[in-house]
Length: 343
Image (cartoon, rainbow, N blue to C red; front, top):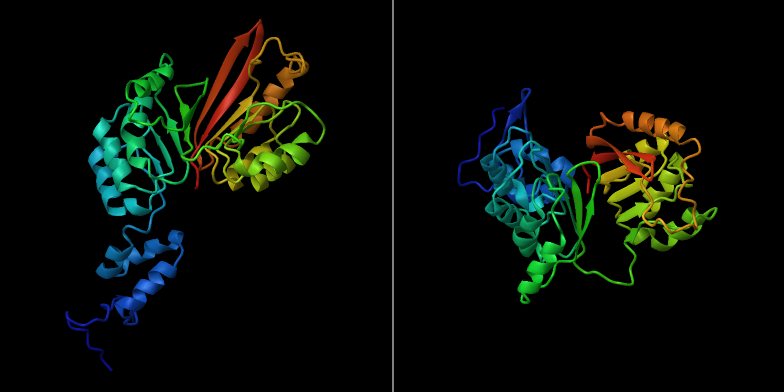
């Protein structure tokens, strides 16, 4: 028996057919409930059901946007205008070296949930254009600045704040990556001096990472530098993933391929891993021998290089930058692995 299509004034949704079978007619009220009971990663199918569901989910369907290299500013603004309310992660085209200030202001206004942005935004644009719009954002935000001049002095931003007492200084910390022009900027809107969010070194003690560091500080850590004696194996990676739900930056002197793969596969918040040896920060600190990496260091570097090579084509990895530095006649090799986070 033939079915009659609803009239335009009907409160029932329009039927569509696929493969010869009719989709059941559902009231719009029920469609609304179905759409918003569906988890975000699966809402995309509703964009093509009918016009009503398309309009309904367009602002609640995408969490992440990785724009292709050929995307123009108009393309990106149009996409954010249509889908920006749910966007939390944005990666802009890598080849473009400059965006005007107004572009970032519009981006922040269209994407109120933005928690990670990777682009060629400058530190001044970040402080002047993006952060003022995001100041009401209750959670932390991370920015990967990909084209920061090596000569840029971050204290200039503090001087600008001193000139404008009415503007409170943003709670943001910068971590320049030595291998390239990238800089990681982490914003903490509610900074608590009693909460440890960054661990750059700790003294070697068997079991210190497992028994003290991660259980005590892991839940708040945003960046972690492992002790030279703590190799990133699969078991160590499993501990870090379980104890550090907010981790963005991990620095590891020595890695195993399975440990590195586990971090990329299961640490959804991670945006950068630095693998390898770096010059000592304090030449007078003899508590841990700064030359401990000399014995067999060539072997360690070779193992690190092989481990890093296994992840170069992984879908979350957008760059692998090698770096060689010299200090007191010694050679230090490291690799920066750039990662697109999932949250």
